[in-house]
Length: 635
Image (cartoon, rainbow, N blue to C red; front, side, top):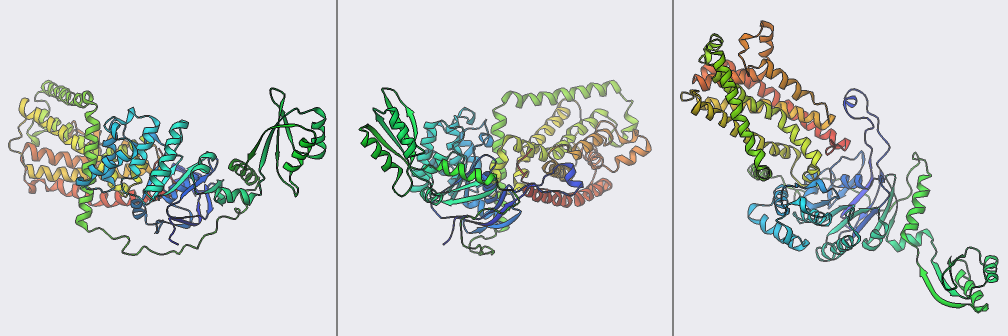
């Protein structure tokens, strides 16, 4: 059989120590969050994973969704080995109870349109796909309302709508009814059973700690505790395997004291509860060869007691759950797990080429550009929702320029001897410094800031659940910052050139573009280093702080480095910003040719050639480590 999910001895142990100490010392492993789990899920079934909080249910889902890397064991999802993360993500949908995984300032439709781009849906089909899904989940009427106005039930339906964008074969639902009222939960159950299972024929893997929900909804159930699957089967099979007995309630009238004594002597274990109107409720387990029920009824009939009602209470899943968990908690964690669901052994093999094919380079580039445009549109919509603050920052540019203009008027010709190679005007010198230093700041801070923002808002996990890679996500997330910075720089230069006498008519603009390209690559590389620190350490990023501070002081932003003491001038020559601003000023203010700019371009190019591959290597290592630690989405 081709299983939808098949795991064999799948385990996950997280490092006990993280942060700075984990970089310097040997890392100890914490007790297993998932401990030797072996399960098999059939295509088309609703499979429930039940367990107390902290049992390892969410960790198991993240392992199967390839969000974290297992410590040991093997697994296949939709026929793909767990190492084939892109193929698995393209064939599954993940629904969590985290309300932060959407953009609150965007509408429901805009949110789905953005995530459709991450799944690779082309523009010409995405809109119709989104509309069709909105209608199927019942959100068409509220699709153009902002997500922040949605109720908890609507947000959960939008989560399902997002998970269905790529037409998945398998749907993971992690605590899907958490926070829903009983009516909303009931509607949600019907939607899962009727729409997803019966009509769509989806395989549903559901985690919950609500036992009645699992019993009513799931075809099969696995009970999990302390990372281990204790039992697995259909609810009625679990009841039979535990040997639980059916309980009965008998409501009678005319119950006299001597009958109570008689029952206690002849049929121990009968609970007796007085009710109103002279009635009594008897409750007991039916067991034994002759049956407790027969004995109780014989005694009551002999004593001529009037029967009002007999109710059969079948064994509940809650009883199984309570007994299994209590028994398991008494077993030392060093002992092996109980017997689990048998399943065919998983063959460790690669995916056939027909299943997963490499994209041609041109197609991959188109896909990246498609995603990049989606991020720019997302950020533009978000910025537009804060119209006042969006336009206020441009007033800040104007006031900044005016301040330095008056400072230059105060200095007069005093600074000219130090600025002769740039034309002698301090205002022109500092305008270029404060304008293009924006690229330095955004290159250094954008990647780590966007990563931290996605972690804290909860959207990173939702994006990582798509086939789009983390590197493309972080790169595309930063594009809006660079685009906005370019607009700011143009505003700086426009104010200076049009109104305050800065001469840019003789500038060498091809050289300016080349310098800008090298500058962005160099400082983006440093920004990637910073993002790598954020991913591993989570706080205390030293890269951005050190380079921003030193660059501002010694990089020639506000004054020429020639005014520094000799030893500090040597320090400034170790900074890429020094060469960036020097060549930029010569190209813009003096129209210098490439040959004259070579003394600055060569060191800047060397910084690019060294820092870019090192930063990409550091980022790759940080991503692998975060997946092993299970901290990609932590902050």
